[in-house]
Image 1 (tube, one colour):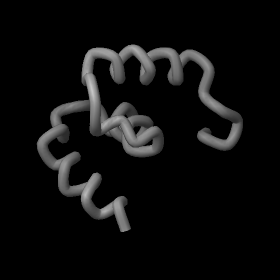
Image 2 (cartoon, one colour; image 1 turned 90 degrees about the vertical axis):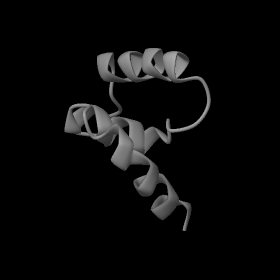
Image 3 (cartoon, helix red, strand yellow; image 1 turned 120 degrees about the horizontal axis):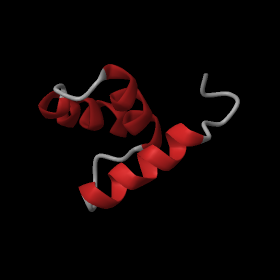
Image 4 (cartoon, helix red, strand yellow; image 1 turned 120 degrees about the vertical axis):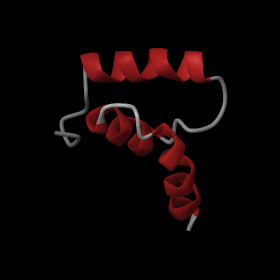
Length: 53
């Protein structure tokens, strides 16, 4: 149910590369401190979980 709310919010973020958006959506990073979240995304991209790819 909360997924729909997130997808509405992502429409403003569409300038980001789709792969990064997919990572953010998967991690639910559309709330809180965006600078902090960017760091988390970069860490995540360095070592993505096996199931992610």
